[in-house]
Length: 175
Image (cartoon, rainbow, N blue to C red):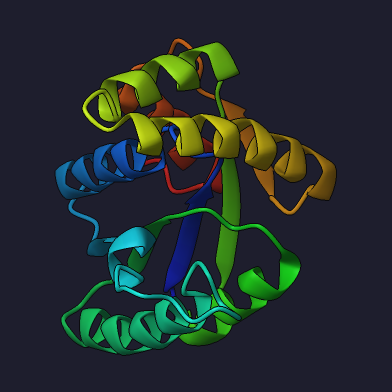
C-alpha cells in the first residue's frame, strides 16, 4: 500500500505558512515520520517572470516535479508544502507534479496580525511593505470567495507549534 501523501499550507501573505510548515516538520521528526518540507516560494524564485506567468507558476510546478522525485527516492513519505494557492488549476497541477494525494489547508489569521507581521518583515523596504499590505487584504478576500481548501484553520493567537498540531490533527497525520 502506498502511504505517500502531501499537505499544502495556503493562506494570504504573512499568514504563517512557512513557519507552520517548519513546525510540522519538527513534529514529524519527533514522531520519526519520513517527510520533507518544501517552500514553494523557493522553487519559484527567479527573475524576471514571464508576463503571462507573473508568479512563476509553471516554473514552480516543473521544479516541484523534479524535487519530489528526489525526495521520494530519498525516503520521504509525507510532503509538507508552504505556498499561496489561488485557484483550482493550481491544486490540480501540484497534485500531478507530486504524484500523490494532496490536502489543501488554509491558514487564516486576523488581518491586523498579518499587518503587524508584514511591518516587521518589510520594515526596511517601504515599497515592498506597501505591496504586501495591499496583496494581503486582496488575497485574503479572494481566498474567502474561492473556497479551494479542504480545511481552514484559524491560527490567530496560536504559536507555530500549536498551529502545526492543529493542522496535523485536521489532516489525520497526528502521531
